[in-house]
Image: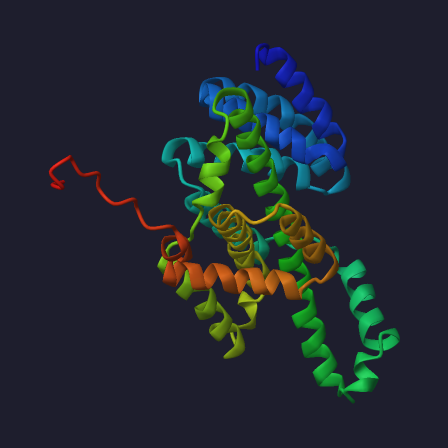
Length: 289
C-alpha cells in the first residue's frame, strides 16, 4: 500500500495465474477500499488486461469478472460499510450471470450429462423414459450453470474478505472481526430464497441456475454466525477448525445446515438473544443510581 505501482504489478501478476486470481481481486479491492475509486480504477484496468486476454483467447471470463466484481463489491462496502449489502448485491449480480451466461460449451455439457445418465446409472436405476431423460438433462444443465456461478461468487467474496482483512491488519486491528461477527442478512432475504425455491418446484425451472447462487450469502452469513456465537460464548477455537474440516468433507450437508442457521438468524437475531445482559447501573454511596 506504500507504493501503488507495486500493488498494480502484484495485481497483474496474480491475474496472469488463474489459480491466484482471487488475490488479484483482493489487491484491487484493497486499493479501492483504502484509496477510493480514483486510484482503484487504475489498478483495476491493469488487472483486467490479463482477464480480457483469457476471455478472448480461451473464452474464459472468470478472471475478468473476478477483478471487476471485486472492485464493484469493494465500492459497495466502502460506501455502505455493510457486509449484508455486499453479499446481496453480489448474489443478485451472480444470479443474473447464471441465468444469462452458459459456462460449459454444449458438447462438454452433453458429455457430462450423458456420463451421469448412462455410465452413472441414473437412467437405468430410475427407469427413466426418453422424455424423462431429456427433461433431466435440461435440469442438470441449468444446475451445472448455477453451481459454477456460485463457485465464482464464493471466490469473488473471498477476494473482498481478504482485502478487508488486510486493511484491518494494516490500519484497523480487530475491525474486520467485529464486522464479520455482526454480519446478519435482513429479514426479507430469508423469505426471498424460499420463494425462489417454491417457484422452481412449481415449474419455473428456468430459475434453477439462481438457486445455488442465492445460497451463497446465507452460507457466508451462517459461517459468520458461528464465529459470533463462539466469540460470545468464548468457546475454544479448536471447534472452529473442526467446523471448516466438516465443511470440506461433509458437503453438502454442512453447508445446508449453515444456510438454515443464517435463515433462522435473520428471523430471530441469535446474537442479540445470546449476548450477555448489560451490567447494572452503578450506584452512589446512598444507594441511588
